[in-house]
Length: 103
Image 1 (cartoon, rainbow, N blue to C red):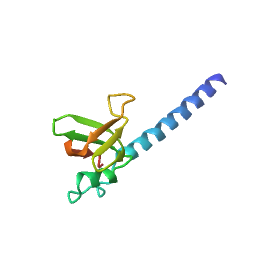
Image 2 (cartoon, rainbow, N blue to C red):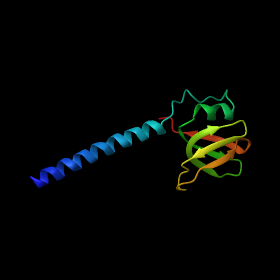
Image 3 (cartoon, rainbow, N blue to C red):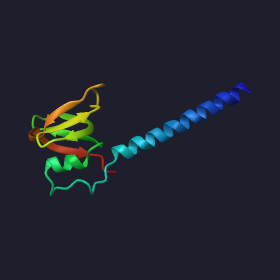
Image 4 (spheres, one colour):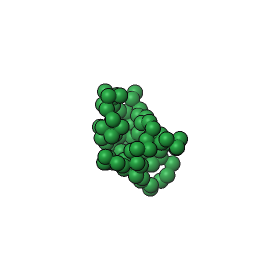
């Protein structure tokens, strides 16, 4: 009887894990029709609000995180990868490229 409870608990945890992974993948995948070469970096970033992106700066540094907000001068990126508990402001004028997961 006790092993049945443990087995059921493990199955429930596994199902929750699968749903979490699916939701994360959905958030990481961007509809590639949202971004366009005809838009400015600012316009593309505003369309990517809430999505996980990478930005490459003119200096060569790359930052990956979630687009929190965008102004005409700055990108506010949160949950920066490999920097737990860090958010950052990046000058839009310093952004060389935006990389998004499209598939």
